[in-house]
Length: 303
Image 1: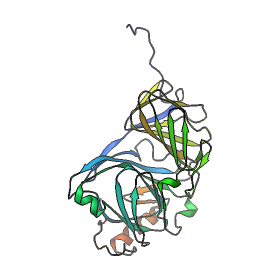
Image 2: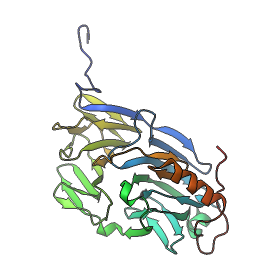
Image 3: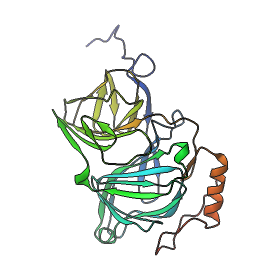
Image 4: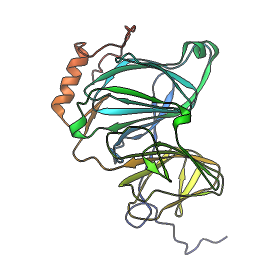
């Protein structure tokens, strides 16, 4: 078929439905590889989301698994959401919680928290499979020093919506006629969507900033293909529809834009450079609370 004279669709920029496309960058964490889309050189945040890692999929042989030693956070909330597998979470508040498929685990660091993440002992013996997303949301400036907390929402507490060829789970916020029970610190939207091949999904229109990340499969937004491992930042103000070219899983994320700058170094996020330096000093001098029963920790990086 001749394509002479054909015009390629405008996908990004003012004239297309997608403001920006971000390709995930692989990051080797030792035991497994993640694909990171936020922060990116061209975009730090989408709504409050400031960090977005696609974990795995990873197969662990018997005797191996995730072993992330105790480490600190400030100024954010972390969201661990698994499609498959389990992670044992322990933190300096004394919580010990197995993170399971479909559950929501929301840890607000605020003024400071320490936690570890490991494959449960029994799964480490037998071998395991792990697949999911870890995201961070920045806190509003007035809440950056709030008291830390950890909240676990079991899978059966997550609202679900079933449309024609589309299954949705509302992790945070309000959309598609349902509201998540998760307590957030600012307007936040976070949705898991499974689309059958050929299905269409209208994206929420009342969200200041919105992105779509393709976990697997391929979707089209307008005439623009978005493949696995890519995040499409949606142009605001339009009626945008995602069409699945094949069976696909996507994550919708965004919310109200947080005002002001945020500085990100290692596991610390803050609107204040001075506060970041204080956090570095506090971890170096062991002034953070410890995870009960754990002595191993990740030292402060040297660069």
